[in-house]
Image 1 (cartoon, rainbow, N blue to C red):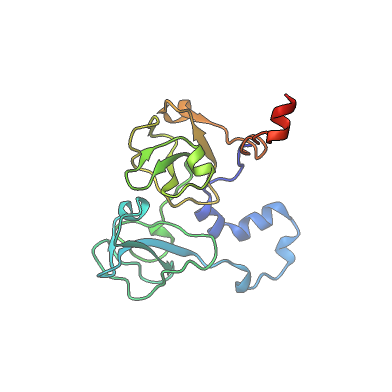
Image 2 (image 1 turned 90 degrees about the vertical axis):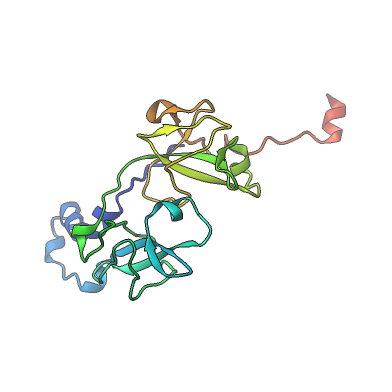
Length: 210
């Protein structure tokens, strides 16, 4: 079954009060305190050894020595090549936003990301696309890799590029045809939970009856 969420992290964070008013015309009579507003969290990539901010690609590809790091949007976000003054390796909550490589403060530096994603199962040691069954069965050494739907999707046996191991629950995600291809042409709907269950093997007694 196709998941119906989208990558609306940034509008979701900043537009909470506006949507309340749109959904409920009487909401404007309510007193919303600051505690009702979610805290906007920025996700950056840092080199763990030096704590210097890096481009997003090393963290998207889970390269050794790099890690995701989280800061409040209202704080000074360092540019790539600079160190953050505060923050945490732990994400508190489920909303985060990526920001410009130049850094800065506030919503002006936030990057919009509303593209659907196509997920492919890859071998983590090589990022070579494998059969989806390895990820469905949680086999060691295999993970889902999420590629923007406007990019080319690799066929099974080819290395996946320019995606991320780090999904957002707000994306609409698709699977891909084994032969890959151009984004939407290669995308197929997620299977329903019933369809994705492992096929039950007959017991010996049932096999004899047949």
